[in-house]
Length: 420
Image (tube, rainbow, N blue to C red):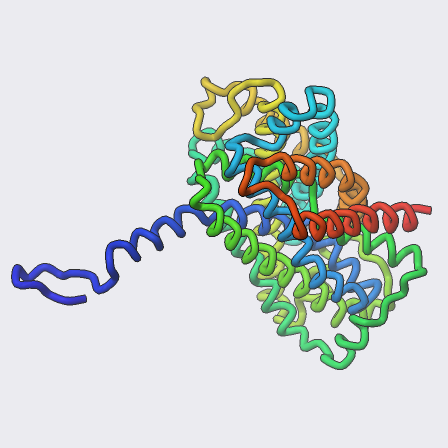
C-alpha cells in the first residue's frame, strides 16, 4: 500500500489486475462443486472397498481417470457457456423429445441411486455416534429443504464448497496410515485383469468418477451463473483443478484402507460405514479419527446430495418446459422446488427404513458405468454441433472420441464381466 497526498491508502495492485482476480473468483465454483460431489459417499465407500479387497491394485486407475474426468466435464462447460442452455434442453433441440426423455430417464435413474447412496452414508455416520437413522434423515432432509427455499444459486454454491472442503481430512487419514511406499508402487502395477471381482470394482470405480448427473449439473450451473465465452478459460481451470483434487481424495481413501484393511482384513469385503471407520480411524486415535472420518463422509455425502437433487429437479424442469432455477422463488418455480422436495423426502424415508449401504453404493457405481455410453454419446454429439470456434473438431475430437469409447466401453465390459 502507498499513501497519497490526501492521506488515502492506495492499493499497489492495479485496478485491471484486481478486476481480473475478482472475475476469476466469480467464475470458479461449478467445477469444484461438481468434483467435490464426485467424491461422494458412494465413491468413498467404493474406493474403500477397493483398497480393502485389492490393496493398491486399483490405485493407478485413480490417476488415469484424472484426464478422462477433465475431458468429459470440459465438454459440459463448453456446451453450457456457448449455448446458454442446459443438457436436457440441447438434447431436445437437436435430437427431439424422445431422445431427451431417454437421456433424462437415465439421469433420473442415476440420481435416485446416488441420492439413496448419499443419504445412506449420512445415516451411517449418525449411527457411529448413536443417532438413529430416522433422526439423521429428519435433520438432513429438513436442512437441505430450508437451504434451497431460502437461498440463491450463489449461496447454495458457497455452502456446498464449504461443506465439501471437509473431504480433505481423508488426505490426513492416508498420511497417518503410514503406507509402505514400496508395497504401494508394486501393488499399483500388479493388475489381475482376469479376475471378475476385480473387474467389477474397476467398473464401480469408473462409474464412481464419471457419473451421468455430473454432466447435467455442471452444464446447468454455468448457465445459471450466467458465464460468458470470455469466462471459458477460467471455467476450464476450475474444472481441471477440481478433477485433480477429487482424484487425490479418492486415492487417499484407497491408500488408507489398503494400508489398514487391505493388510489386516485378509481381503474381506466391507459391510458398513462403521466398519470402514473402525478400521482406519485408530491411526489417528479413536476419538479424533472417528470425528475426522465423520467430517469427511459428511462433506462428501452432503455436497453430493445437494448436487444430485438439484440436477434431477433442473433437468426435469427443462424437459417439462417450466422454470427450473434457484434464482426463482418457490412460488415462481413450483415444479422445480416440488421435485427437489419430493426427492429428498422419498430418499429419506427409504434410508430410514434400513438398507445395505455398501452393496447399494458399489452397485450404484456399476450402474453408472453401464449408463455411460448413452450419456457420453450425447455429450460428444452435442459438442460436435457447437458453432465455430468452439466446436469439437480435428485431432482433439479424435482424442476425445477415443477417451469416451475407452471409458464407456471398458466400464460396460468390466461391469458385465463382474456381474457374470
